[in-house]
Amino acid sequence: MVRNDGNSDQTAKITYLSRGDFAGTFPAELAPNRVMSDGIKALNLYTKAMAQQWADDRSDAEKVTFGDTSQGGVVYENGKINDLGMVLGLNYDAPEWEGVLNRITKKDMLELVLNGYTETRAVNSIGKPKTTDYDGPNQAGSFSDGISSEATGFSSITLAQTWNAELAYSMGKAFAAECLTYGIQGWYGPGVNLHRSPFGGRNYEYYSEDALISGTMCAKVVSAAKNKGYSVT
Picture 1 (cartoon, one colour):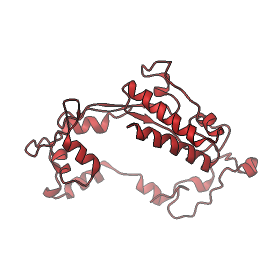
Picture 2: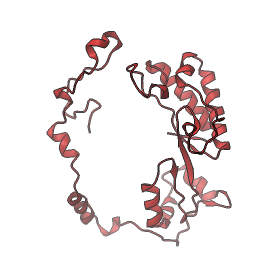
Picture 3: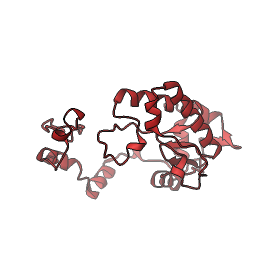
Picture 4: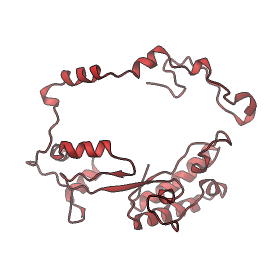
């Protein structure tokens, strides 16, 4: 495991940026304790030979099955999730998952895994349609991706300054409802990074320098969006 200070042996003595001593804690250069140790470097050198060895060591029982239609596995029919899809959504350990995963073709698997930005590809072998997941913590698609400039935009910073959790919930609900009318099923946002420096170029995506107000407001937005059937990332 690599710790959040960048060193698994806990020897890195990181000075974190603080408003209490902004000048004294601002990172001016790459300090020696930011350099990866040899142990960390070794974890980052995963070679083709190592991958092939892993594949060679697998037993026949672990080999992946593709395109097996003998067990059913279609989860979406006639424009909606069917009973099997509902069962699987309620229980990620349901035994019916085996038939679904075995039915997926290798082509569908590769498309789903390798081409995922702003969407999930359709998995035709099990009936799953394409879904759309747009970027933009404060606007649907950041006013791009063909989304109308009339779409709702809001400022996370301004929302946090209201200290109004009920307003945050209302904003999340309205935002999700509008996105769903545009045919957008998922949202790359909202974001809860903290405002550690006024020079942060993406501060507009986040709520505050305070962890409590950031977490409270974002949780309300997320809860509201999920209650509308909208997926957040």
